Length: 319
Image 1 (spheres, rainbow, N blue to C red):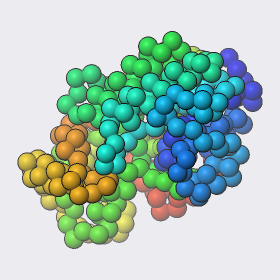
Image 2 (cartoon, one colour; image 1 turned 90 degrees about the vertical axis):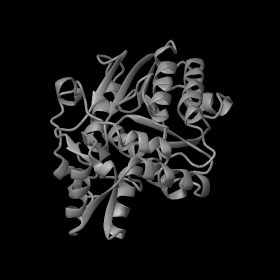
Image 3 (cartoon, rainbow, N blue to C red; image 1 turned 45 degrees about the vertical axis):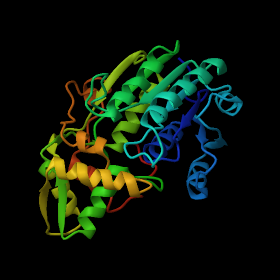
Image 4 (tube, helix red, strand yellow; image 1 turned 30 degrees about the vertical axis):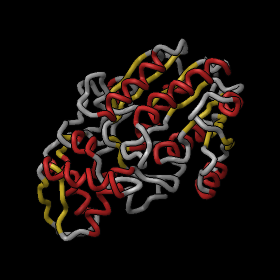
């Protein structure tokens, strides 16, 4: 095992919500981090990464070109975070998850990276009803067959914020609905179940996978301590904002009509047909590795949500 002080780790997707937290958690362990950012990354996102002692380099995962191989040069581990539940108009989930992961694996192998740590999503499966989960499976297959040691994490809904400039796209959208609508619409009434995991807990587990080899070549389901319906989760967001609002159900057929319109006219659809499919599925662990494998006592949903009220309060603390 390489000690954390000698370890050099490359992180793609570092300017994103989870990326900010993972980089900060690695830096707290004195790990040398090289953040791979795209050419159009915002200056404030780059500045945050630099402020916590990470190096920032530009490279694209859209090909396994020389810029990507140079970004991975001399790195022991690559952490692969790029992905989206809400891609922009014209973006393909197959390209975003499958092709970009394939390019990363190829470049990592050429650069001599010894391990890949990949974050996909709970529900990932080759026969999943959603394209999101099927393409996440494709991404995992590229990693599993890449000839490099790996650790794969499949988290449920990630919540909370302690550092950085970003938040979960899904939580952000629900926050917007809660704070701007007189009644909060939920597909199917929000009956689907989730197992929210605090971002700090997940980042801590990812650091374990990066800095030790005992978890190599395994895939882990990750969730928090409570299973909630999406309706119950949104009601917690309503309470968090000091509001009193009701939730109403949008039938799946109506949600699909809305999704078709959004996909046609919006650059980032407010809701997609694939997200309608996701909303009909539970997203809970069969075998939650957070505490049983990684020994991390999970943060409660209420405690995790309190971090939104004081987003910087836990910065620099051990998660």
